[in-house]
Length: 598
Image (cartoon, rainbow, N blue to C red; front, side, top):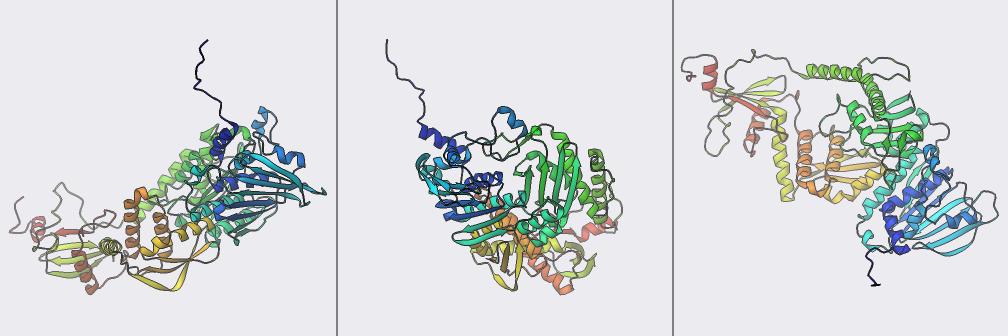
């Protein structure tokens, strides 16, 4: 019989283990997530984390949990070894984080790992050393209750994967984010994080049942006192589900989704369904480019969802999506509407507002907002006549709308500037006009690399989660080129010490800084759009506002500055900045002699 070369072959165990590890371990933060989950499953109330070189050189997690016997320490590194389940049916009532038995196996396959553990009351502990998935040593250890795991030289045997890691600053931010999520999910546990030998984060224990007070205390530690103190509390029970949440009022929306935290049975998750429910609740309040801020805890029986969608156990799938969507969106809508003085139907905790009622209430609120923000009309009803021509010819070298001499006549509602323009009339939206002026001026400064910056007399504090502070500091050079100087002040506060010189008003500086920071962190693929958005944000916040009083000299100066713009007819967002009626159009409208024929 002819011998043939087989194309399908069994992978060597060491190759298979590294491939399997890649499904679970993507970066140091993935390792930390798995180790923290093991500590919390072990009943830990104090967890200490230490990292060197953003977790690539060393990642150590120590806890005061139940510890392990010597026999369990070695078995824990074998694939599919777990104490969480014994039969397939156990998955239907799972209430732990880890259950596949892949975490330590995957971590050890791509690092040099050691585990030291001792149950409370034992006279000696046990230590196991593993190098690239192979157990290299076992020995007795000091009787320190709990477990300590050290992960060194991550990806030492998979250098291709190490090349895809981001900068140390970015990886440190991810590590901090994992700790923040674990702390929000477990306020009863204390967390301490040391990075590069320095204390980076310390979160106290808030023992007892999760109440508004204990959860808010944790939220304030993570999101900052100002935002955490302003957030609205939601506590409702629905059939098969308990919902607890903090949601920020409409005026505290953020520029990105970085401050949205979701937990299901204390597990950090992502869910498109829940995110859509959040945005539905904010339909009446959310402006363009603004995102809700929330921390949401859901509790439901394990048979109503599946966490086994992805090896990282981050995504979840719900069995009955519609009731969950309606309960979450209805509860969040109700609390937001109450803050605006909009009455809502009072119901028992098991009877949320029906979706139709939520939509009707939101529609009524939107109509009220529109009516309140629409200025009174002083014009006659629109006729079927054609729209007037907006611009007329101007002297060579000037824009078409520029028809001097101009004479300032006054303001309408302290928002629109009215000029006599060579016998015609020019009406200018003062905010949109100055937005365009500042946008082009700031854009030119950025393009030339010479942004004029002014130092602030007093540093402006901006509260952010510790993970975001680290991200911002990693972008400090780019921010300085844009005219902003920032410095760390504590773990969750950023000090802004300098801003672009075109920016004269400090009242909106905090929101502006947050928007610019978020824009500059966006992926490079959208660099042009990001740059324009950031420029427009700066110009919008720096420009004069509607209802700001302007005198004749200021109004005429604004007109001269607008003349120098490449396109003074609209603001950077595309909104018109002026309406022009020449003398012929005015005569035609009033049917005066000499009016041009129709």
